[in-house]
Image 1: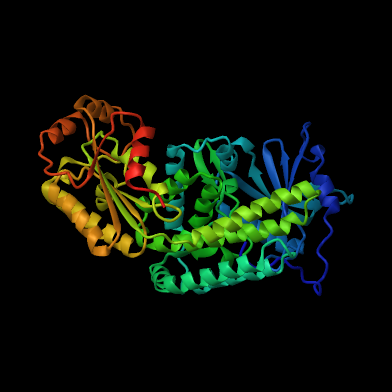
Image 2: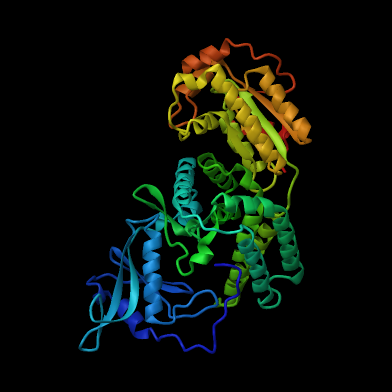
Length: 523
């Protein structure tokens, strides 16, 4: 949904009456099952869960942003839903089936003269929805990594659309403001909606050159359009995107970062800041998106603003005062998020160094969501960048020549260049690498001084037996280091590290994080 207000066209013909169809789809006999048919209602569809199948009926409604008022239009949007969702969930989306009227006047599935149309899907356990898993605390780092990889692959394959990169964004900002103005008095204050719109437009003006550049690079694409946790499930063990925005290709055509922003915002709003930051960083590890991070705060704010005004509209449709108060409480939180995302903090540069096995990546990953403006810092890991330079995913193993002196020099030049671009764009950065050469550490410090950003260097240490045990226990990690590498590193003179804070990582992760945060205070 965009920021446009929800209205009906009163001068158009009345939408079809679907009562008979709904009654037929609610009857277990229709499907030849003995159990009950479960029903889920949304503003634009009614979903019937029958046995091992799901039947999705488009409501005969007409809003400013969609028109399901006739069987022909509902068939077209059902076919679009099937085609578009098969991009990411081909096993879930089975068919488009008619509701037909037989010669005796009764309705049936798949036979007779069509009077309506359904999307037919495989049924999956509701506990496998990622919003349900998030509520149970089930979004572990591996799942987040697989989810980011799935989204990155989808965006890489989505067709690029010619666009200026700015006009669509401006339309959403203004549409959000118009929708908020149309809400009942007291839902969202005039001061807040005015501040949100004014600040968003000012940020858009600053970002316009970047968004033009991203559009020219083909990063405006026909995306998912409704990418939040309730539209992702765990299917056959893998995170699977479904229920994309199907009724208007123009609304699903966005900068790929705006598509991703819905999910990052959803995680952040639920208090899952670490997961949100990890998702964003893994996505950026898989795609060349780093400089575009400057636009992410605006995109997050826009997504939260949409949730706020849609929620405020729903508040007036609750059955009782308690329900209204609960929904308005969520609206309040979304508005707070929308405004908070636009608050920009000065960029910081934090570097975490030490021999392999000292826990650099563990600490860097825990620091990143807490540093700088929401949604946290860009986490640049040398082990990951080394693989990206070779066109490999982080978990693929590199040959020995990838660690030659020349290859390492190229790596550090690339790391410094990427870090500079991010800091100049106003993004905080957490660097994660051995940094065992004194001149490399000095170059990182000099970069921070040259750009006038706050710097904190942390050097981790632990007994050699701890380091060996840690690297030997790794599985599915970006680092190729083993016990032999640790022994080799331990014999190397790392030079003067007195300008960095030396911390022992032999204790607990929580204690180490507390000490690091004391040295590098969060926002």
